[in-house]
Amino acid sequence: MDRVVGMDPSTAPPTADRPEVRLSDPGEIAAALPHLLGFRPRESVVLIGLGGPSGGRVGLTVRADLPGPHDAAGAAVVLTRSLRTDRLDAALVVVVSEEPDGVDPWEDDELLVGAALPHRAVVHALMLELAAADVAVRDVLLVRGGRWWSYDCPYACCGPGAGTPVPGGVSPLAAAAVTAGQVLAPDRAALGARLDPPPGTHQLMRAACLRVASERAARAREAGWAALTEECWTVVVGAVARSRPGVPAAPLTDDEFAAVLWALRDVRVRDRALSLALDDDAAAAEALWTECTRRGPAPLDAAPATLLAVSVWLRGDGAMANVALERALDSDPDHALAGLLREGLDACLTPGDLRELVERAVQGE
Image (cartoon, rainbow, N blue to C red):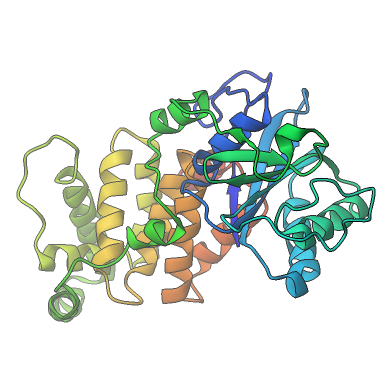
């Protein structure tokens, strides 16, 4: 299940991590889904939390693969529980599916309209669970084939085979997402594939990491661990400088990537590297963490993956933060910082909240 702190369309003043964007009708909501999630959902159920002074602020967005009819009730419990971790006043439910219309098992139930639209069992289970959790449901939508339907609409335009076209063009939310640096992935798998290792690097990087490990051990015996920590920080700073966008520099070698990976195993160096997400080198650091995560063998990839999660989360890309933290915890389930960040993302910590915590950590508070 994906949990993303969405952009913030509200009457509150816009900030760097919460651009002011308004989603005023179901069509705009349907068009905004990929930008709320960071990828184009397929065969998914999405819950969007709403709150704020106007009641229209997009908060936590929760997505899961569509469950089968027999699993609908259990999925509804998990999705509702996840959404309730946010401060919300209401919710939107969106089903994304290319499944054709079918026979509605509740066609005689007057409380359920849109009789032949698919996945009625999932919708029914969510409505019951959200009502039990005292969450008002603003609307329930089906998005399919570039059109949208409302399950609660009794008119012909919402009937099976009809639907309303999803608006095209560049929406305000899409523009805000691009401004924030979000790169839209075609689907969830493609988002994860951004961290796949380059072809042919696996054995080469393992060999490089073994060489650098031997060199670090010899250097520690010669100069001591305190001196080695400072040398490791110099290695990281130099690699970030060579990763700056638009700065001509020779690509890092396998041994140089391995040196950064080993440097970040030092918790003091890794924690110091958090500060790079707050200054002018944030983009360069993010590029370096991405490449180190792609190339690094487990468990050396856990530290750069965690730093990558912080970097993308600070600029509002919660979907990629999810992917990076999954990589870190898959590689090293006991990685303390990744575990804390996972809890923070699950608790709907906003990018602004995270920035404040990182600033305090950097200042030693």
